[in-house]
Image (cartoon, rainbow, N blue to C red; front, side, top):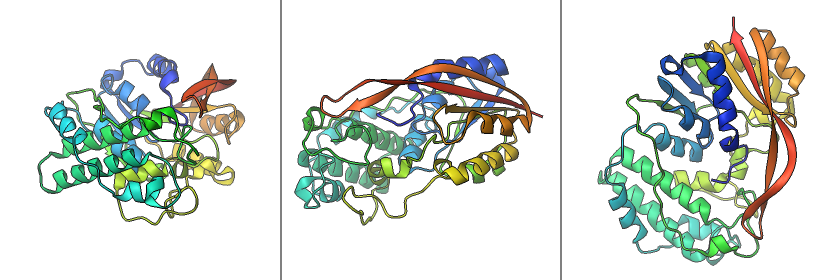
Length: 333
């Protein structure tokens, strides 16, 4: 998925240094409290004893329920996906509010794709209600729909705005592909809570933190995926169709980010704590170092990182400017 702050290209760097500091990961419980689309948690899924993952955004929680929560293979995935790919389109929530044909003057999807997404989402809910599918299959199908819908969305990258004309990928018909999940013997926990509240109720060995770096709220940038995950009764606001009262993270607010991080580290019942951040974030390197050194032994690992930006016209990405990515490390006293 196109995702702000994705650690896809940094996963080797992060895994290497965590492994180097901790040693044997197979005996460790690792918690990832800002899991997003789950890139880092999925990388560690087969390496650690068990995972605790968390993200308060509904779309992320939906993805994690499959990628992390589902630890056994989905036996009927091909059969179920084929049935959904052949459902008849219908005019539902997505078509009404997020397609031009719905009359709200928004074009996040083509009319045809909006109707198909509605039909697929309604069928998944109907199957769940009638117990035609298991809970694991429900999580698998919903994650598959989220990823497949994102591929044909008419946006430059995020859902803070839609494009005036349908780009090439948005003109393609949606086709559900399976959201792949790695089977493991261990069961893993998935939460959808405020991280600063959850930290008081969990324990483990390794805590990995990847909070928002800047003022861009995920609840605004991915509001449509939240709506698709929840498929609830909504009253979209403004030109972009934002959800009412979406969650606003303190880590995106300059006055709240520092005390929020301090409290999180103070409450953490983990020996090893790692924080991903960069040199352009709300919090400075000095502020983070001061918090970490107050609770134990501190070191930091760095790597240059080439920022990518979306090219809305050609549906690709191009190279942007270089930033410095930090992996702050605390061995807590």
